[in-house]
Amino acid sequence: MIRDTSAQDKLVEVKPNRKRQLILAAVGVLVIGLLAWLAPGIGRLFSASGSVSASRLSFATVERGPFVRDIAAEGKVVAAVSPTLYATSGGAVTLQVHAGDTVKKGQVLATIDSPELTNKLAQEQSNADAMQVDYLRAQVDARKQRSALQKAYDNARIDQQTAQRDLARYEKAFHEGAVPSMDVDRAKDTLDKANIAVTHAQGDLGMDNASLNFDIQSKKLAHDRQLLLVADLKRQVDDLDVKSPVDGQVGQLFIAEKATVAKDAQLLSVVDLSALQVEMQVPESFARDLGIGMTGEISGNGHTWKGIVSAISPEVVNGQVAARLRFDGTTPKQLRQNQRLSVRVLLDKRDNVLTVQRGSFVDESGGSYAYLVHDGIATKTPIRVGASSIDKVEILEGLKEGDKIVISGTDSFKGAAKVAISQ
Image (cartoon, rainbow, N blue to C red; front, side, top):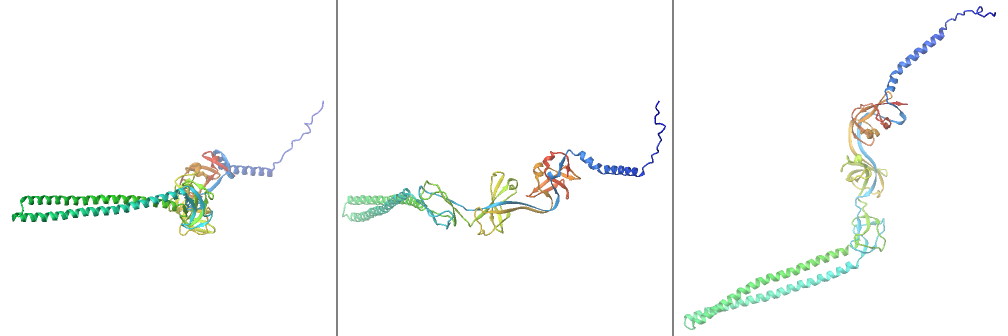
């Protein structure tokens, strides 16, 4: 039988390690303290619907101060007056200028050769001359007829006077018994006939004189009407010399030299460089606040000029509205058409306004809410926004000065009430 080693085993007494116990106790206290400090944050983290990295977001702080609403855009110089000249008649065109030439008002720019119009003017002028001869002849004939009628009236008056004297003589002789009563009656009949002749001669003189006047007036009106036709044709012939309506510069030629064109065809354009304006494109959201007469600034070439909004397009094209500014004062001489300039139009300016930097949150939420950031948690907060500018938006309700909000990237929140923001 083999003996075990139990008789050789001895109970060893282990002395406690005070240093190790102190270290373990300190670590335990530290862990408990750390858990107590992180407990609120961990609670908020678990209360959030999700977590989004801060690198994907943009933040801004609500501030109070001056608020300036303006529109800044790039504009181009355009001519306020840029007439296009058209052919007033068909024919072959001879150009007198080239594109880019400086021209004066009234200068001939092109000539249209129109034999048809020239011949028509000559024919109508001949008709006018013939009508003038008819008018003059009518006047001569009227004078002759008036003279004949006046002569007949005068002769009738003389016959009337003669009949009156004969009647007086026969009545005297009849009272003295020198002539019979039959001669007195004959003298009375002769006087009556003379009176009738005078009456008719006087009536013919009046009526024929009115008829002659009507005939002369008719001839005169026909001649005047023909003169108007001739004057209009002369104007058309004069318009065959296409003249510049303004002082300026030849813009674009729409035809080639010696080209045959139809009536109302485009010939060329003239740019009035003394009346330049600046055209800018305004986003539709700002165009509703833009009004004619608003002041602005136009800058370029190292200069700044004052401008006034002079026109706003009534239609929206590709989400933008065209507006024009005229220079407040003398138009700068160094500008050229289609030159690019910077334009700024002041819409509104106020002090002591609560604002925040403009971001996509305005468009995404319609300005009805924003995500307020506090202790790493973005909380969805109802707000109400007011006016907006290019870089700022007015806060009316829901936020206070110093609040930090998410201004872009909130599309990744998916409308959650709370979102944790990780660093």
